[in-house]
Image (cartoon, rainbow, N blue to C red):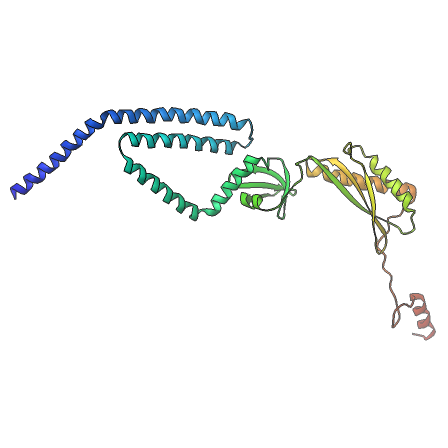
Length: 301
């Protein structure tokens, strides 16, 4: 029993002794590894500042700039860790660490694929500078002004004042109408006039009325087209361009166009007809109402 305890104590003492010897032998490498880590920390900070300054010149999304700068910092620091482990002759640890990171990354990618898709879509949108705060867009059934652009979601404030939170992948993967991309918009104003009007006169007066508006976009011609013979009117469409940044500007331009045309038509006696419905009477139809009433009177009904 005593000999077994003695052997165990000797084994433990030998292990501690061997660890001490190994530590002393690795002490220079350990010092070098620590210095390398400190050096790479400083280098990673310099890279982060450099990436931030560089991206800030081309990108206006602060969140994405910080993200890319942080990833650059982590990448440089990780290289320093791997080199330090190599200096300490821990090659197997490096291999196991890389394998573990790969497995964890794969598991997280599968578990959070929707989150990852929104994140990647947000980064891609920011890199391409597709959507910015203040832009007026329509995606799906939502129409409004962009009030926030994040890495996972975008917030649109609708015309009625409600905020809609939309995952970035829904904007990135689906069609989107960007109304303020070119800061101009065409208004297609639909009008109907009576069948008794002179269409040449209607065209001339309508064009003069619209051309008199003071907010029209220079260099764009006002155009007018007659579109159809409707049930109670001949319909036409007048097209004019405006400088466009907000929905309020569009509504105002439509309103002023309607007022100008209505005023011009009133001055020149042009009629915008009400809807008209013709009613046929009689068993088989086609009989005027006066004849039906006359027959009813004669028969005493």
